[in-house]
Image 1 (cartoon, helix red, strand yellow):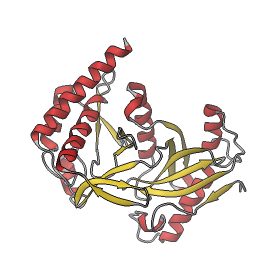
Image 2 (tube, rainbow, N blue to C red):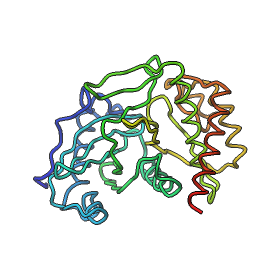
Image 3 (cartoon, one colour):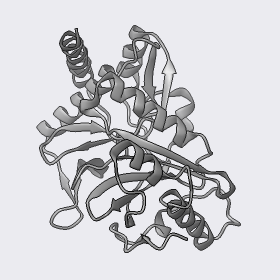
Image 4 (cartoon, helix red, strand yellow):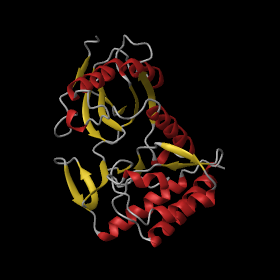
Length: 291
């Protein structure tokens, strides 16, 4: 095993084991965690030809023998999120599938994020490399790390998780909450893939998909699925689906909802409509700059 790779200490309260989600009761959490740890270490090992460290060494000129520190920093229902620090200088978010997430979903998201950066790199995290270790039932990808990012979430109220000066929740004012909603809708509209006729689906706006930088710029950090649908049909779905809240525990509702998975807080028709118009304008302005 590569001696230049360390796992932990972790950054998120409680460590990774508490946040591991598995649909196999017979699998002990400790054993599951060991598979996750082993896959992460292999993904940065210089001894594995297809490892992430080899891929980014080719893309970014990073020494593949450099020391790598891996620390758990957040989680979602689909993936666990780690911070990989290479040579005490380069930092990357590293997302590995939760045990109940089937292989292929992480690769799909990696490809979706790549496509989104081609459409407009400004409001999406950039993915760099993908790795799979099928014998351990895990896959992961490495993407841009936003330093001290503010994760947009619902914790009874709408607000952000701020890691500074310690990890805590801050509630939005009603005005700020409305602005956040409009911008979420705007980015969903903006990242329509016109060439392929595809739109983002299965969003989780209550805590997994959007963040703010310290400069208050919103970015999309997850892109689970694209779906084939026309422009007007997608806009109609936004208007229909985001006026209701789809709580995390109400999984049965998802069979009838294509886009708005997991939102604890509903949006107003005005917020949705204004968000749509902002997104259309953003896309038009970006297209003009490219011409």
